[in-house]
Amino acid sequence: MHDLHTIQIDPIITRALEEDWGFGDWTTDICVPADKLSRATIIAKETALIAGVDIAAAVFRRVDPSLILRAVVKNGQLVQKNDVLLEISGCARSILKAERVALNLFARMCGIATMTRAFVDQLEGTKAQLLDTRKTTPGLRILEKSATVIGGARNHRFSLCDGVIVKENHIRASGGIKPAVSRLLESLPPTLKVEVEVSNLDEVQEALDAGAHVLMLDNMSLSEMAMAVRTVRGRALIEASGNVRLENVRRVAETGVDFVSTSAVFHSSRWADLSLLFSLDP
Image (tube, one colour):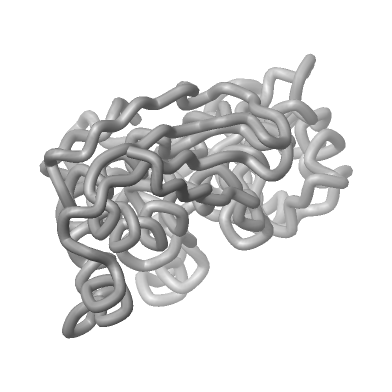
């Protein structure tokens, strides 16, 4: 995934600000004079891999284009406790109104990137590449998938129209692997790959015979994965999926699969601990 454009992130930021503000920020508007100037810094309170510093800056910019922003770090940079990440100066009201949304998005993205990097580190020395999934927070997919790329993973399909995966329920509804794949190969644009989810070695052979380009080994044992790799012999790409955790991802990769996909980079990552320090000195 390439750098995100304003057109892509503005709707997300606008919705988040609308949600956070409600009918207005009474505390800030009543307590803080409109002409009060201040400065603030966002700092890391723990070691983290940076992702979303540009998104945090965009939140402040969306609230008040006159704010002065300076990113001290770059996406993909590893930071330590107390490192300064972003500096903001200008209208105190604007900084306070943007603070929570900026920190929420920034911390979420850093947490995902940090967890992703931990998975990627486990794959070092194998041929397997880490893929993310579509099990993202509704409305935040583009940010979360951007964070996995920063962490060193590759994006799996972004939406249902980006690729074809014939899963268990598709197979049942269409009458089997062969008829499902045949219909797809006859109708799809030739540039799209067909991936088939398989759960045993018989289905591996059936999907190969049907002409699948990618096989997703779903919740197979390590020995079954290794046998599937030997059966396929490079005639299709192989993705291992299901119950992939940080503790077992290397053993999965060592079976010889091409890709390992996991939603743990989303659901098992915790937010990075970030904080905004506020000062009334302009």
